[in-house]
Image 1: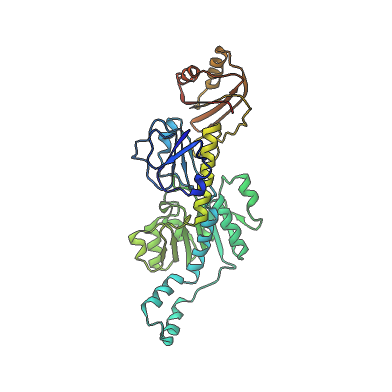
Image 2 (image 1 turned 180 degrees about the horizontal axis):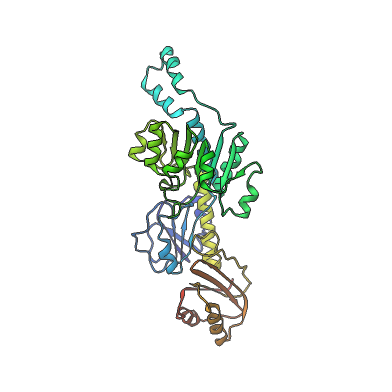
Length: 388
């Protein structure tokens, strides 16, 4: 039996992929093997030493102490792309709301006698907007969400340009041929009447859309932020809105100073708030946690290398996380040879400071061997999996 602790409500459709005959799942559980989480902030949490994996039913993992888990040899999984359609639809809705001044128009109707047709007709003149075809859209980050936004905006007749120096081959294949490429963020901002960001919040992206870059954008531009609040300089946005340089700011991260501004559309973090997205995220992360616990495979981890090795029937497996330094694999294989354990298959991958090795052998592995492996300097964690 594997024991899974949930720190938030996880979609039942996802938990169905953790069968009851092998998994005990509960919010209150002792010595869990893994943790499933959505928004719960884990940085101040005393994470049990028994935890072998953490799964985030969503894309961002800034609520999880990833570096600490890496030092413990614990992979952190997420669900990239599972909520991509939900976020894409909200971005498109945000562009339409800004272009047609929908939010201030709604506030106007709420403030007047809606049965007075003259008031309505006179008032609507203040909310005349513009259409999307022919407008330029710049997209920072062409991951699962950015690519969907790019393709949908292109289908709407917009002139779309993207910036992502690390775009994956898969996402490049999915991108419409009509989407242009910018070589720098500065170049992208200077030509974008609409600008949307789809990158994680890290040191390199904090304040990425700065006052200088906002000033370089065309007059009456719109900025959309459905990624993370700190990526866009809020004070610079408000200044640009007050001066009339920006037409609107649409974001999914409200604050008191933002919501008070008439040209801001601030939503309560609705990006992935659809039943479909929550189910997709839960299903994806549950499958990944199960595959890791049962087979040692790593898919969509933010701190471990992608590592998938098919199981051989009747062969046990060792899963070893270690510091990415020389001679680790040599020490491991020498120890196995000392115990007359014959390796039938092996996979070794690395990512940054972490390396991960899966080793299949043709005979039973004593627990003492796993204990000896843990004694090798640089080894972070060792798991001994029974024969498949």
